[in-house]
Length: 95
Image (cartoon, rainbow, N blue to C red; front, side):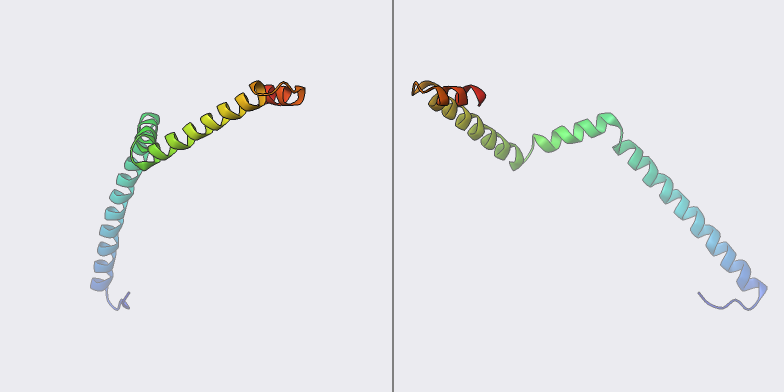
């Protein structure tokens, strides 16, 4: 900022700062309204579901879940049904 030497420059600087204040206040209000709208519960839920059900994350999640369920099913069948040992049957019930 330049050095102010007379009353005219002072009035111009004040006017400039007041205009800047008004512009920044408008920006702040716009950002507040935008943030308030984004944080509404309905919008949060909608955005979350959109992120879950779009893109490659859904495919990856389904594959990992399917593999986990299959592995659990196979291990339970192995430990529970293939042999008659008490330890494996107990372990099968715990799984």
